[in-house]
Length: 162
Image 1 (cartoon, rainbow, N blue to C red):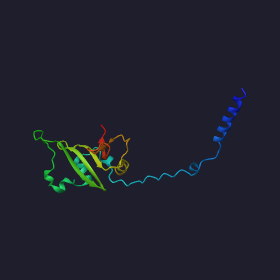
Image 2: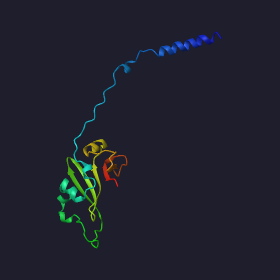
Image 3: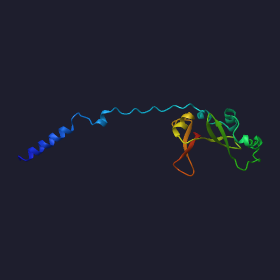
Image 4: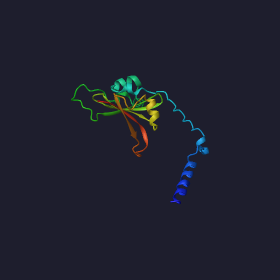
């Protein structure tokens, strides 16, 4: 029994020394301040464009890039008659506004916009520049990845909630 007490005493003394209030030099320094994130100006208010037709978006954003290379007559026109069918109803217009590129996909027959993609590789920056939130009741934001690399972001896609 006598050997037991000295070993318990030694353990208590060693553990008491470990609990002193002294701190190693690395813990004395205050933690480095986290740099506040830079708030970027909104380039385009994407939520305000959700639900618009392609004509309404063109009114707000101006002429698409495609009309600069080819005449507007080449762009699909709305069809009043169902007998006149557009072979491929999916169409794309590209807009440059506020320093960002927007790719708008729409149905050439109905003129309804399917989605809007803002190109870029920094999700936080794209969310700020597009005035987007992930919890909006009127739209959904999805990441768009580069086809060659499934981990490289190439933009964000905004779709109207149904």
